[in-house]
Image (spheres, helix red, strand yellow):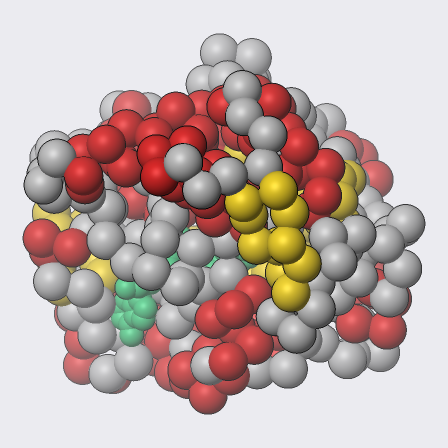
Length: 348
Ligand code: NAD
């Protein structure tokens, strides 16, 4: 937990070089701004479409701007004088959101298209894009005993409709801005990032947060049952947010990873049924399971193959799922209690 076990990152950055993080009102973007503030960077610009009161976290000292980056002028404003740009902005959510709102997911192409062009015009030194495991060929994900997906498995392409194709095409923009225009770009394919200070209710939340909330709700209401999407045998790996922010930093500052997509995920595979059992165990509760076969459940199995990241960085995300889930559960339990007491909490 934390960054103590991680080697320092070599960066050619002055403490007051301007770092721009987009999607900073959301989960990973917010965590990344905090991470850079903790690393001693003093010139941080945080950008998100949401009005400021709805941001999950606002880091003291960072300049926070509410801009819609699908508008060209806003994208240009966001990256003025930037030395590094981290694009974490996207219209996205858990499986329920990305299966039902494919148009919204596809429209995130506008964000990256304008932002990368603006970063190039502004003379930014580096540009980071947050891609996803949903960019991988879905034909390779039909078995719950998922073999890890390696970077070359994105092609021949058969990405997740909507969200996954947007990621794949935006990756290509990053590669071509490097090849044709010389903007140094870095691309990570995230595998299910989770942790405190993310969406935990409202329809955009991911499985780990949803499980925690459902178990907390059951304990609070005395209705000890839980709805599980699909039959619960589908498998995933989940990567803790501290590993994600550190991994982004390592990937962005690695010369061997210019315009080369790389997995950023854990190899610890778990079924949704076992994830529920883990949360029950953390909470000290036992729930009756109801299965909804018609609910969105995504691919049957998906795992990260970390051979490449181990080889190129000598590091991989290693926070045990159980440790990360304990942190996440504790934070959601706090949020739940605060909401019940009428206090302001992280919104959807
Ligand atoms: P999030 O929804 O918490 O944050 C995304 C933020 O982008 C939101 O705050 C949203 O308001 C903002 N945004 C959306 N449209 C915008 C626009 N037009 N202009 C400005 N801001 C806009 O999501 P997250 O989990 O923090 O994800 C961050 C990035 O990582 C996204 O690109 C996402 O696709 C990618 N990713 C996340 C996961 C995961 O498990 N969380 C997995 C794979 C990829």
